[in-house]
Length: 344
Ligand SMILES: *Cc1c(COP(=O)(O)O)cnc(C)c1O
Image (cartoon, rainbow, N blue to C red; front, top):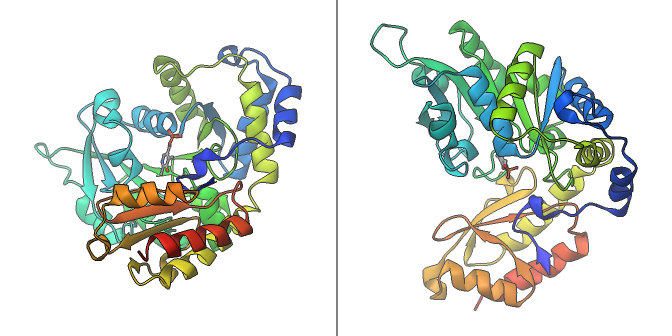
C-alpha cells in the first residue's frame, strides 16, 4: 500500500528506534529528563529562541501558545482554513476562551494589508486583538510557503500595534527546505512558534513550542493543566533528537516526489492542478467528478483497491502528501494508478 494520506503516517526507522531504546531518562515533570532537556535546548537553538517545551501533539503546542498569550474574551486573528480553525475541535474557544477572527488568504497565506485591516481599534467598546497566528507551510493551502519578506512585513504591523504573533509551524522545516530561509529567520518575528516532530521529520510522537523563557514557563504550567505533563518522556524525545539530526535535509526529496507526482496528475484530463502551486510535500487537486460520474468516496475506494491511499479535502478536492516512507518508485506506481482510476 502506498500511503499518501498524510506525512503523519511515517514510522520510526530502526536507527531511530535504537536511539529511543538507548535514551537516558528521568521524570520530566520535575524537569529531570536529560533527553527531553537536550531536545528542548536543540529546538530553542535551531529556532534562535531562549527556550522550548516538548509536548505530545501539534494541537497542544498551538493551544498552549494561545492560552499562554491571551485571556478569555480576547480576539485572535487566524486564516480561515487554518488548522486552528478547522481541525482542533474548537479548542481555542473551549480551552482558551478566545474569539477567532477569520481572514481568508491566497492559498492560506495572509498579506500585511489583510492583517492590518483585521486589527480592532483600541477603543473602549471594540473587542481587542491580542494575538496574530500564521501557518507555514499552510496545510489546506496545499503546503504553500510564506516569503520571509511577507512575514517580516506582517511582523512590523504586529509590532506597531504591540500584538504578539504565533506561528503554527507544524511543517516549518518543509518551508525551510523549499525556500532556503533559515528556521531562525522565519521564527524571528514570532513570540511563539510550534512545530511537529511527528510529520515529515518522522518521529512517532511529539511537537515543540519555542519562545522566551517566561512564556515557556507559562506554557509549562498550562501543559500540566491540559494533562500533557509526561514522565520518562526521553524515550520519545530521543526520536525527536534523531529526527532533527537526520531528517531535516532529506525533506527536499519529499518535495521532488510531490512535483514528480504533480507532473503526472497534471496530464490527466479530469484533474485540475497547477504544478507551480506544489511548493513542498502536499498536493491539493480537484477532479471533475461529474464527468466521471463518481463521488469522492468512490474515487478514494477505487484508489485504495489499486493500492494507493489519499484523503478527500472537499466534495471534489483531494490531498496527497509525500513523506520519508514513500520512494521515487512508489511515486511512479502511484502516478500510474491515478492515471488509470481517474480516467475511467
Ligand atoms: C498536523 C498539524 C497540526 C498538529 O496536529 P497534531 O495531530 O495535533 O500533531 C497543527 N497544525 C498544522 C498546520 C498541522 O498540519
